[in-house]
Image (cartoon, rainbow, N blue to C red):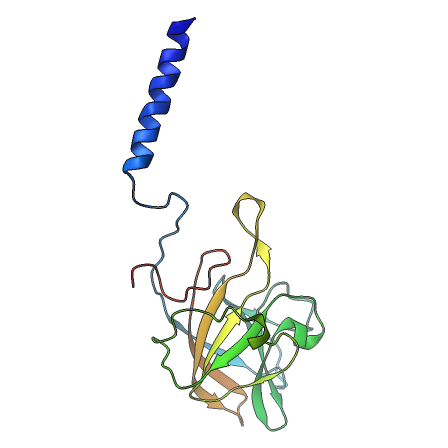
Length: 188
């Protein structure tokens, strides 16, 4: 009877030693900065099949024929009152946790963390697009590992705004870690 407990005790001891010698968090997700650029077209353009929305976590363009018909997207581009605006699904009457805010006076690289203050974000108002501010987006909620509910955070900077053509070219980067407000990888 004692002999059965010894192998189990040995395995448990060895596992404890391995885990204790590890400085790293076993649940940490290592990621690297991967800024990219995207071109969106305003919803006000008459052509069909132009990408006017973007899913920041999945890094994919989305075509919106009608607001609820396309599945998941975090931001869409529209023309309102003579200017381009970013819309979250909530601004189009859809249920979503996607939110957006902006910060002035900093560069894209200087924005290291998304604001924790939820009052700083809007989920139902159009956000005018301008050169200069850095926009921070909390994505819509998705299922994460181990049954958790996750939002992700991303930052973007307008590079080229053409109101007449109804286009926006922007640079963005996103954090792939569930519910982490960090906008740069650990150690950077």
